[in-house]
Length: 177
Image 1 (cartoon, rainbow, N blue to C red):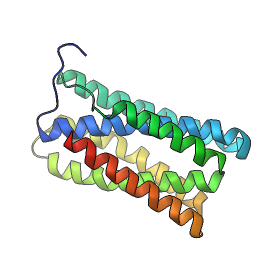
Image 2: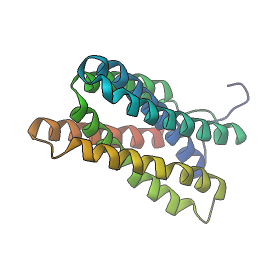
Image 3: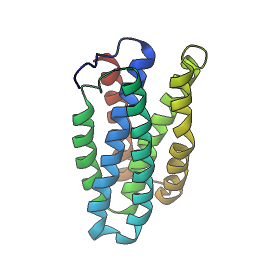
């Protein structure tokens, strides 16, 4: 990362946080694929497809950071490790837990993406365009897994709430550091 600087502007902070989040998402799916080996092996095909989307998204934001000579988020590695652990444990608990986890993450992410896009549409068209490239995939992940999740009972509701709060905390922290 020689020659790269810390994010200083709002668009740079958004790009670094979204890049770290996409890294976390890649690893959530990677962990879920591993965990689903025992709990729901047939679901791994869809998870691999979602993971491929997240890998493309991560590359989009890494390219934007590189073009601006901005370093990755300090939390990039932690997002990856946290995502892997979360993914593995939710993957072991089965399809509905995987689905509830994805819905919880995507609901938070989509809300933040819309806010970022609104704030950037007139000030940084490149950042706006990069964010716009991923919204459709993220919405697809949300909608497909919302159907699979069904109506969560108490345990799955708690899982979803914890995942949502954790996702909010990671985003908030990333914007501050």
